[in-house]
Length: 168
Image 1 (spheres, rainbow, N blue to C red):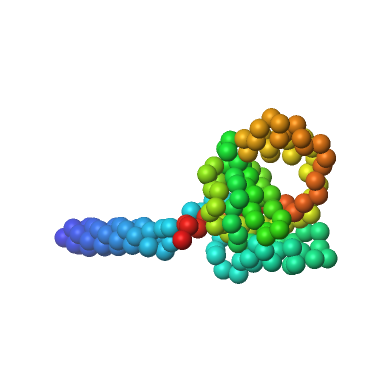
Image 2: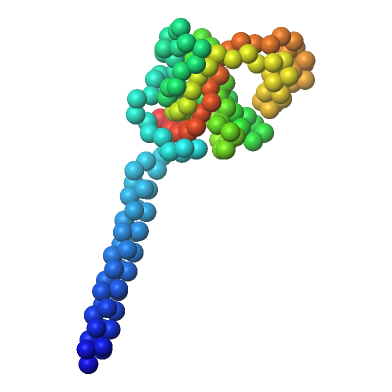
């Protein structure tokens, strides 16, 4: 008799735990959807907090050749081939954004979207070969690609995480 009672109580407790677990999973799924369904996340989990406006980045970089920083700005273009890079507007300049270890890519049609990137910015020299490759990825004409004859020193960025915000 004790064995039957013990089995019955154990079964009731296990059923209760299982129902609780299912409810928790359902609440979590609903909660994730309600948090920020309009944002798209790529790479590492990052937040929108404490992002520096892109037009202030160059001033923050003054005196440094690299800086760990979260940046928010408008995407001018993204790689049309596979989404392996994007260009962000800094105001008078552009910033080339790559993704850490090519562990993730972004959509190919991000022109004009708002993004938050987390990683590090650095002053970098891009070779003629790399510039031509990027121009090809951006679907530039052969004439525009052939016109690239000098390396460029510019600001580049390696992002570990990206948030794409919807257009308002």
